[in-house]
Length: 265
Image 1 (cartoon, one colour):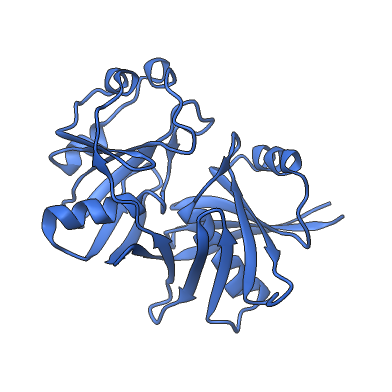
Image 2: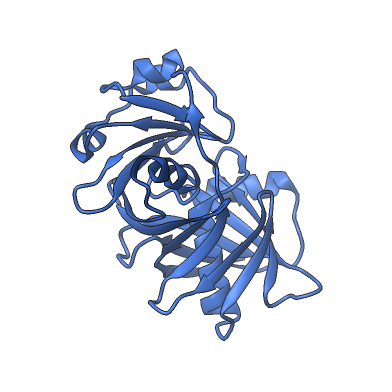
């Protein structure tokens, strides 16, 4: 069967920035092994597969996310990319789309400023002990360590976050399942900055990680009292996000662009 693959760059308007995701609309689910092989072939951080629901096929979709290594429980940038695909290519007159996912119902809507806003679950991190393989892998020790799905390592300033390097031989001695390691600090020109690393993953550093902000936003809320933040992920590709804490939800807003559309024969 012939499929269409949309390569979408999330959290950017720069065709060479943000976080690339491939989105493949399907009419029904293939087997999991096929989806994992397709994600490996796409060779980006995440490949998303969407299948319309029978009750509302233009506004509600089932959504699953695969890295080249595993299926994920939540992926923010590939959700944004999936919403961009639906709202700009499949049903461009729609204002919002709902996704049924492993993390529940995720709603994404168009905003007046041209961005897309995702409604994601809040995952407040709690104080934690840093595992030895992670500590040994870092060239700078954090000032605080917390954990939800991901470890959250706090640093004093943006320059230190920018200077973080990872010793993969040490880092890959731990397996965190769906989780990863976030490093974060107050930003120079934004409210906070971050980077995201995953041990034992094909792609060590994720360019821009929407789901990480499910923990970063409630954490920085406890530190600053703010409920709305401008954030930047400081990977080589960079990405900008506007985030807001809304009860037990986190609203994450960002741009997205279509980089390419391909037919898979």
